[in-house]
Amino acid sequence: MSTVAIYDSTYESVTDVIEAGFRDFGVSLEGKTVVIKPNIIGPFQVHRAITTHPAVVSAVVKAVEARAPARIIVGDNPGVRGYGSNKLCAQKSGIHDVCAEHYVNLSEEGVSAQTRSRFANRVTVSRSFLEADYYISLPKFKTHMLTIITGAIKNSFGMLVGGQKAAIHRAATTCESFSEALVDVFQIRTPDLVVMDAITGMEGKGPSSDELRDIGKILVSDNATEIDAVMAAMMGLPPSHVPLVRIAHERGLGEMNLGKIETIGPVRPIENFKLPSKLMRGPFGHISWRLLTKLMMSRPVPIRDKCTQCGACEEHCPVGAMKLNPYPEVNAEKCISCFCCMELCTHNALDVTNKVKRYRGRFKY
Ligand code: SF4
Ligand code: SF4
Image 1: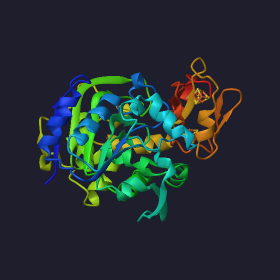
Image 2 (image 1 turned 180 degrees about the vertical axis):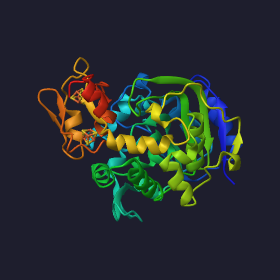
Image 3 (image 1 turned 90 degrees about the vertical axis):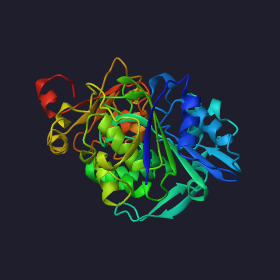
Image 4 (image 1 turned 135 degrees about the vertical axis):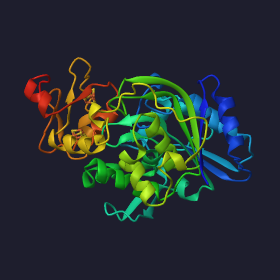
């Protein structure tokens, strides 16, 4: 049976907290090759709290080192293109500094892997995930405009190398279908342990917004589905309303009923936690969110006084819907509302608008 542990923590005390977590879970790594995957979605600095905090990565590395592994590999495949950008993203996030001797550019070691996905028969995965004896996932506690949450299951999307993430976005354009595709990828190699950075979390329009929230927790689990279910509950959402969690549960990958999940520490909803939309509250919130996001055609819109016209949004749009002229403009017919552009804008210069706001003239669009 799996367990989800919820520990009080700060970034100063996190080394002791994670060591205690490793003891609670009886983690034994002698002679093993261990891969550690933080969430490094792009070249974001640590104060933005978009990427896993380097103190958490450092604490996990220390706890692993103390257990005499054969080899430690730390790395991720950020959303940005280009092999050189992999190390740059790790450096910007402060993660490279705390684990330089273990850091590996995972984008240079892709191997083909079979999936059971209707969106892609085969994908290219970093070899380390397939060959490691033990895989530790380090997601952030965050919301997501498309998939509602960004947690442990979604962190595994970073096993994929390079631009194929864009191809999957093009093939799976709704919350439901993209969540299914994420679970397909997650199943290629599920993590043995998840350590979630919920010390500073993100609410509102995640996964790259500036709406941060002091939560003061580290979550540890040997089951990614169950840690995501607990995270959803802490956000004030029934786990079954989150397609990622529901689909993983339906495939037998973990419980989503809180009454059946063994926990260490209480699961308390965070007061007034901001979800990507107020529409998600209430018993039919998940249905109205999915319907309304479709009907209202939520689209990104630039905030001109923040935009530096760097072009990253145009470069990373999987369907070519974003063009600089000289500020970003979105072709509403082409846009699939994947929010990759928002995710990778390092200046937080994209907001989201919908039909109602556009008609009210709140945004120039
Ligand atoms: S919106 Fe962001 S990513 Fe796009 S051009 Fe402006 S600053 Fe760059
Ligand atoms: S404009 Fe942004 S939200 Fe729309 S398809 Fe492109 S990346 Fe996705």
